[in-house]
Length: 536
Image (cartoon, rainbow, N blue to C red; front, top):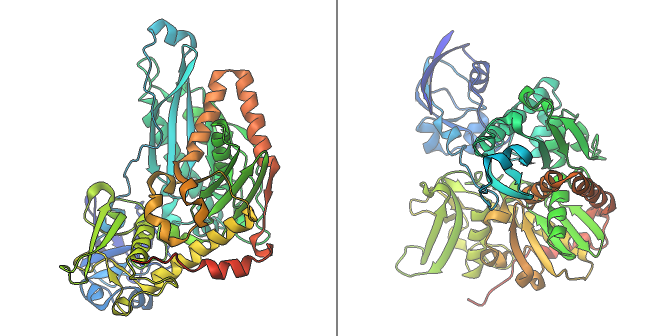
């Protein structure tokens, strides 16, 4: 037996391990769960820890993914490293920034109803959007005949210990014990948000037992894992979900404290176009929009074209690039992630370029998140460092373009090619759905809908140029639509039934296009690899 001293965010713990046991297994056995971006398969190199003493020999994955200087400095991969002797390990890096909260909806604030009015008619509802990376929720209250959004909040989806993308989680869920653990994790995350929001309600209602109604949206995989449905069918052809129907459940499946509370799981369209998209369409239709396209940039790049009652949808195999997965210095949208970039020519800098950037939480830069990646590439195209084919200037070809002055964060030629493949899939998917038509508006939704600057990514050629001035970031339309559904139910029985009929109709009328079978898709894809060139 050997002794492992683990340094974490809350101090140090002394654990006992078998010689030759993986560090990941030691931590899990002692109830310490850590986020593993690739599901612990040793592919991404992101779960780095630092040995202060008792440094083990590196394995082949570590030699491939870590620099020699990093290996010599004590860095290892948590999911791969094997303990060989008594050791002292700093694991704080893998937890950095996980708990950043982001408000997700505009809040109306509590009204000034009297205590007597509160007792008579006050109702409380919760809207939840279960995303792969983040779970967002909003508290709504009805009083004096009006329903208001009182508070919204978000939390990291702690299923990330099984991987940061849906494919990793589907794979993990093939093991029944893992699937149950994943269900427990997401239920705990949702309940923690509900408790937080319930405490923000008025003075007469501070208990979760006072909640009257809950609605949940999310992608198809997340909702299968939440409700305990087998998810393996979502990861292999013919990609068949167990159910896509609107469900009415009792809140006890989330937590016993919610027993008796009705929970509606919104309907989905297909394995890859889920209830989050249905909720988004419901929200935009409610605004009076009747000719629009919605683009949700994620692992599957869901696309929806709504025109006068006809809905066509598709999902693109964009991969995790838009969330910075597989990028050399990529990271999730957490504290320290570079999220916005501006590049300008300036001969006073060694590279002849001045790079300005912002990080989430204003922390020191630790890596590139999806928006930072997209803006950086677009800016480098704009100033001519990357040409229209995606080739970076020769001086940056070997070591990459340094984003930070110390060169710790770099953009490589391989990163650019990965982004090109992802954005080409999206562009050609849009073209396949539009078939020469032009929607009145293009809405960018999902996590990017809150943060993406459409002007700064225009050189990527993510969507047809004619949509440029028609494009806007629309925020979390899934949560907004889910909140609208809750609002209808809090407004009265008739309104609630109308909302149910509406989301069912949206899911039912949607036509799914298989892009691989679409005419000219392959030719469009190859052409879409290119960027928009500039005369600068």
